[in-house]
Structure formats: C-alpha cells, structure tokens
Length: 425
Figure 1 (spheres, rainbow, N blue to C red):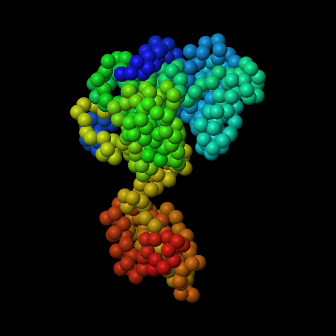
Figure 2: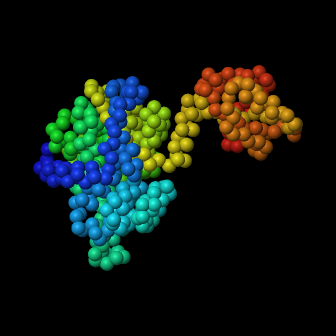
Figure 3: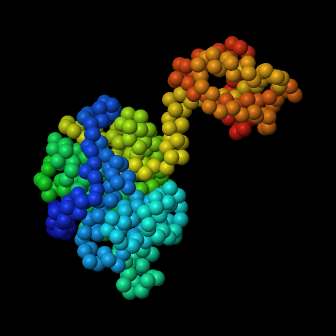
C-alpha cells in the first residue's frame, strides 16, 4: 500500500463516526437473498441501505461530518447534491437544529427536491450537474457568495474524510452481521461509500474482496483504473443514466487514491441491466431500489463477476426511486417477459362490433389495460375502425393462445403500434 493511501485510511476516525451514526441512523439489516442466490451462482445477501432514514446511506456521512465540525456547525451547513446527499444533510441539520442550504442541478428529480425542502432546507437550483452546484456551494461556504465571511460549513458529498468515516459504518455493520462475508459489491459514484467500506474492512484485517460498480454511461473510476493511470490527472466522464445517484463526472481528490488501493476491481453495467436489477429487487427481495442502489445486483446478474466461494454481499445503497420510473421499468419487464402485449386490429364500424372483440379477449382470460380507437395514418375501409389494445397475459404461451383464438375468429392482428408503423397490417 502507498504511504499516502495508508495515511488517509489511518486518519479516518471510526470511533467518532460510529458514535455519531448510532445516535441517529438505523443499523440497516443484511438479509439473505435466497431467491436471487441461484441467479448469481452462490450465496447472496443484501445490505439494505435503501431502508435507512432518508432512504440512502448518505445520512451516515452527514451525521459524521456534523460531529466532526463541532461548534463550527453552528453557522449552518451547505452542500450540493442531485438528491440523496442533500436530503441527508438536511436531515442531519434538522436533528441538530442547524440551518441548511442545498445547491441542486436544475434537472434534479422533482421528488428529490421536494424531499429536501420538506426537511426545512433552502434549495437553490443551479447548473447542469452536481459539479457545477458543488462549485457554488463551496463559494458559499468560503464566504465569497451571499452571506459574507462567516459562511456555513461545506459538507462535501464524498471527498471528505469525515464523510467517508460515516460511510465506513456500513462496513462495520457488515462485519458484525455477516462475519463470513467473502466479497462485497458496492456502487461507486464519487467513491465515498466504497472508500469507507474498504477502509473499515482494511482496518479490521478482513480478507474480503471489494468490487466497485459504475454505470457504463458515467464511469470515471472504471476508466481510470482500466488505463492503469492512478498517478495522472483524474478522468472526467459524463452521460445520462437512470443511476443518477452515482453519475459523478470526476473522481475525488481523496477517493481516487483510496479506491485505487482498496478496490479489487471495478465493473460497469448497462442501463438495461440496471433496470432489470430494479425489477428483480422489487419482485424477489421486496425492496425498492433506485438505479444507483441496484447496480451492485446488476453487476452480479450480468455475469461479469464470476461466482465466488463464500458469501457475497451486494450493497443496495438507496431506495429513493421515482414512482414513474418504477412503473416504467416494471411495464418494460412485463413486455419483455410476454406478460404485457399491445395488439392492433380492425373491427366493423357498427354497434356491438367492439363488444364482440372484447368478449373474445375476456373469454381467453386476458386483462384489458387500455383501449384506443385509431383512425388516422392507417388504411381503413370506410366501414372499419382500428383498435389498439394493451393487454396483460400470463406469459408467452397465454399470449399465443389469445392470438390463435382471435385469428380463428377472423381478426387480422398486428403487434406493432400502427401510429408508428402504419403498414403493419
């Protein structure tokens, strides 16, 4: 280990952070994922930070930072965040009776902005990224922005040893709850969580493999380590991803050398794989996970991590998922599995014709989710009307049976949306 990395690890105050976190945060459960274990090739457990107060691990770092600030915190707190960290700092400020200001990108999810505001923090929407918001938050803390020289204390989302110490309590809990753990798979954004867990494992002398996961659309750590370029300037990365909580464009000044030392590997996952992991966690583990929280399972399901002897723990780092996105990924999954189908057909433009079609659908045991008359952009006889049906079935075999029944009844069927493919029939 390099001397600089060792000094950073030694400087992480685990005793203070453990006490600060235990006072206000939950000791989240590590649950056995028996239904998911066969899919990843070995025993799997989930560290459920999605069940933490504020819905993510970020509260740990915020509480540890407030404890480290001591009297300095009385001037208030300021931070920048796309959502989870801002919510955590706002919660920590509320618990300690402090003022709080959060700079958030203009495109931050509305529900995350509102969650921060509900905790009494003042939200300022600025810039296109967390990086831009963070620069303004740092100015505010330094006194160069509104507020004068005695500005609030900056709580960095990840590049701060006190924040990293707070996140290290996830690793301490893992060692207490699952001492047999052989591998930990953890999401990596700015790197605070992975640095903290890695430091806790290293300080305990635990022989545990630590794997970081990034979304391929925004994976600066993965590119840095793949290039073997730990000594050069950190790489910037950008890209839209549903794992917005880990969409950090540039590794941190502290977290980059820490993770270069502590991580055994970094893998990346695609957007479809993240969406599939969200669904798997919901259906088989009964956990709601946001995209960033699901990437650890996505990496295991992808097959990029070979099975390993012993227990693997996937850290589900957050559960603050927009309900619209959850609905979208669940609908997509149903479509991929053949349990949701959109059909187009023509019926006679006369009273009772549509009822006859729907009676056949009902007799086949399919559930009608949506119906639309379509008369434009398709070729129709003057006495016909187009009908688009969105149906829920029990799976591909049931769908095939439904199509066969409708075909025998004389209905011409298309599986495409006629508004985008007018010549489908």
